[in-house]
Image 1 (spheres, protein in one colour):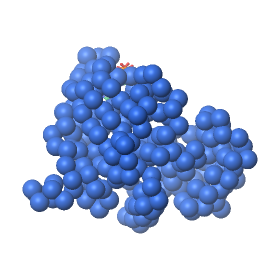
Image 2 (cartoon, rainbow, N blue to C red):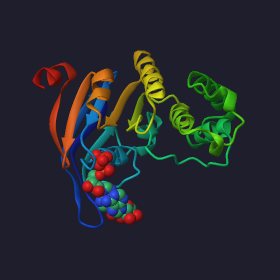
Image 3 (cartoon, rainbow, N blue to C red):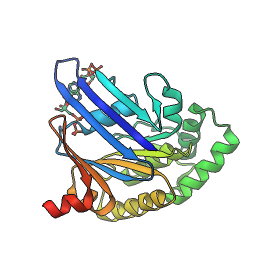
Image 4 (cartoon, protein in one colour):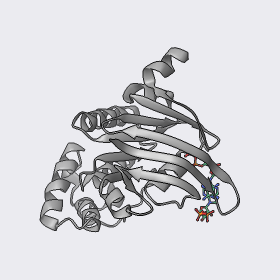
Length: 226
Ligand code: ADP
Ligand code: ADP
């Protein structure tokens, strides 16, 4: 099975700018995949379309076989997304932010609470569960975004530049966490403009530039060519 299939994806923004010029991408279930490319290449646009934050112009997107045009609800149940910017309610408490998200998936509060506890503990935020999000450090907010994305136990986790602006220590602990999630079976896709990050974590890599995929390969092959 493929966790994600993207075919012929194009995006022209309202101002006429063509951000994606026909992207094809397949990510297998269980993979740890990096979408690598410079700033402005189209990485966020691609992920924004997959999680339906951005409207596509043309093309097909399937999440575990569920077409986002015809079966968005099922696609979303299989998908957890960590965008770059913090988009939670800064005045809400950490625990509530995570359980509120579960509500959007129709998960009852009892189950949401169990899941919130599990991920807040794994991410070192359990002590902060009753703290309003605005009181957290930047690194804690980033981990909160991850806990919230996982509360419905999606099979595919997508992270947009997860360690941008994060210090070395937190970056390492986030890498360890993601590796563990992947080992336990979660498919992970991240975007990054750091080759080192893709190299440290991922098995397969696509390189995107100017809205086109330049290369779609295993990490090993890519490194042999550098
Ligand atoms: P869509 O066609 O997907 O609805 P729009 O072109 O309407 O997208 O733009 C969505 C939002 O992004 C607008 O609020 C716009 O101001 C903002 N925006 C415009 N240009 C850029 C840019 N280069 N980078 C990021 N955001 C932008
Ligand atoms: P990346 O994530 O690889 O840095 P993006 O997908 O954010 O790239 O952006 C790709 C291109 O699309 C950039 O040139 C960016 O300025 C442009 N862009 C992004 N959002 C918008 C928008 N809403 N309206 C117009 N142009 C945009």
